[in-house]
Amino acid sequence: MYKIATEFLTRFVKPSTIYKYGFNWSPMYKRTTAKLTEVSDDLHYVKIRLKLNWKNRNYAGSIFGGSMLSATDPIYMIQLIQILGKDYVVWDKAVTAKYKRPGKSTIYGEFIFTEEEIEALKTKLKTEQQVDIIKTMNLVNDKKEVIAEFTKTLYIAKKDYYKQKLAARKAK
Figure (cartoon, rainbow, N blue to C red):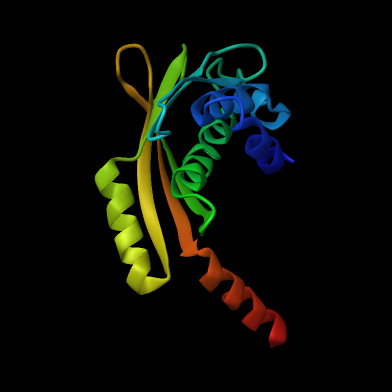
C-alpha cells in the first residue's frame, strides 16, 4: 500500500516530502512516538526527534528502549530503497542496540548516506550481486550526549539476482 501511494504521489509532490509526511502519518511509525523533522531533497539525510512522553516513558521514567529502537528501525532501509530505486532489493537484516544512558528528555537521530557510499555500493553490486552493509547511528540529547547507538546490517541485491535466488529456493 505504501509503495503504491508513494509512486502515485511522486507525480505531484517531491519524494522527500512524501517520505517525511508518509512516515509521520503512518500508523506504524506514529506508534513509535518519533517524528521525522528533516529530510533532504536527495533523501541522503534524515533527522528524527523522539520526545519523552507518557506513551514511551518506562518504569524508570526515561524513554523505553523499544521506543528508541522502533523509531530508528525502518529509516535506513526505506531511505536506501528510495535512493537506489526499483532495480534493487533492500532488507533490514540485523540490528545491535547499545543503550548508553537514560533518555530523560527529547532525543534526536540522524541517518546519513553520502554520495560516495551510494556510488561505492552500486559499483560493488556490479560484481557481487548482493552485499551486506553496516550503518551505525546514535540517538543524542540536546547536549549531544549519546543516549543509544544502533548498528544496522542491511542486505542489498540487484532485483534480477534476488528474483533468481528466490526462484532457485522454490525449485528445491
